[in-house]
Length: 77
Image (cartoon, rainbow, N blue to C red; front, side, top):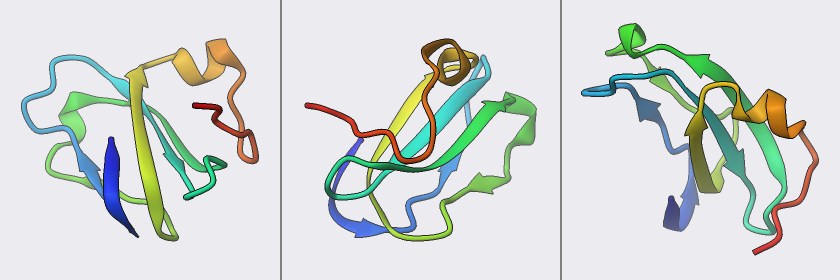
């Protein structure tokens, strides 16, 4: 997701049918927060980063680990 402004964009699992990984990025595309293997059963909990983000990427659970993504990596787009 690309947002118009930076903020502490939260993600919840309403109506989800499978677990996901969530990755938050700064305006320059740097990963600064990751939550892995979030289950649909966590609804209504909201997952939000500790600081403002501009981009959020939702991936199938396990994708962060399988892709070796980590804090500080840069998204090239």
